[in-house]
Image 1 (cartoon, rainbow, N blue to C red):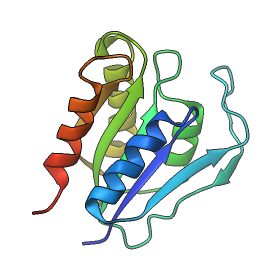
Image 2 (cartoon, helix red, strand yellow; image 1 turned 60 degrees about the vertical axis):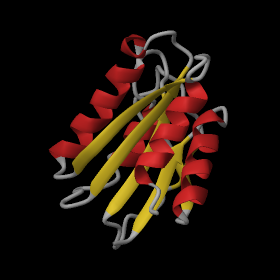
Image 3 (cartoon, rainbow, N blue to C red; image 1 turned 180 degrees about the vertical axis):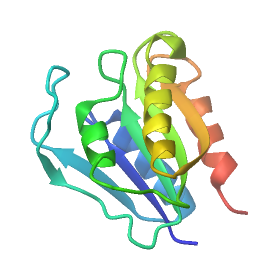
Length: 148
């Protein structure tokens, strides 16, 4: 099974989680990069588009922007016609005090886009960057997927 960690990160928080996950799993970590990512944009110019060729599981991370999925995340996922048979483990990072203020909404938006294209979402994790439980949430995400 070929696995990969892929994330879009604007401030580096999501990327830091992705790198920790990638190191623990011993798999590659690739970053989605876009020229500009502002909430009011409807289209985004992509700089780096990580490939999914031969990948059977993706650990996919994204921040939350304005209570929803960033346009760069949507732009990346929309570059693919199909995710048939690819498993996804999703995680988002946000500063809102509660997941229902944007984390869950963003996860559900990403999940919908992936499942509409035949992907399988195995798990969703919302990481509140200001929470006292941030490290515990990250640790538990990594622990659930680290092979013994």
